Image (cartoon, rainbow, N blue to C red; front, side, top):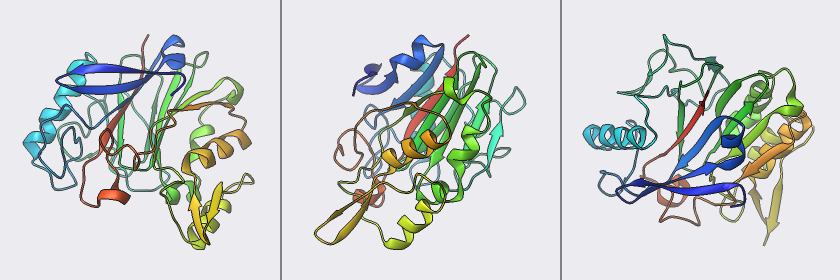
Length: 261
């Protein structure tokens, strides 16, 4: 977990915060699943209104996180496994915070140059990548499962930045190749999206996809090489993170990105 600090949110909750992005003037935080109000199977810091959890518990969990980070709200996209990345300004700040996204419902990524405007996303195995360029002042948050990668969402996110050599990326906990068995069709779809191809492993005749390493490879092809990740697999760390692949009916943990000043 080099480059990340585990910070207490209060009430038993924690988040992993990228120290390098923080030093560069950006928040990149990945909340864990503990310290919330939701009952099983969403226990306990579930932040998604779309998984069948009690809406009051979800709202309480979201409030708990923003209070810990001294925020009023955040903007969150609909997360539809697509490639749309939308800009966020004052008119869209807070969209999706009190319920399913409205203005941002078709998006899987957000970006802004406005300081103090939090961007959010949530996941339970998929990659959440936060990208920031200190001199440009832009921060982006992108949700990428295999479908999004295959459709090119990471390239689209990289294209938001003028000088990709200065872009810094933090990738949150995601399902690792230790647990992510896939078919040849999935690997083919991801591999076709980039000259970097898909990073895979074969064990006992079975094929496993490494989402985090594939993200790094795709971004590297786009000229972005300052990429760090937590090294944590959501399926291995079931006590700290939600994993749809492992649990089926489960919650989603929150990721937050913000330009600090």
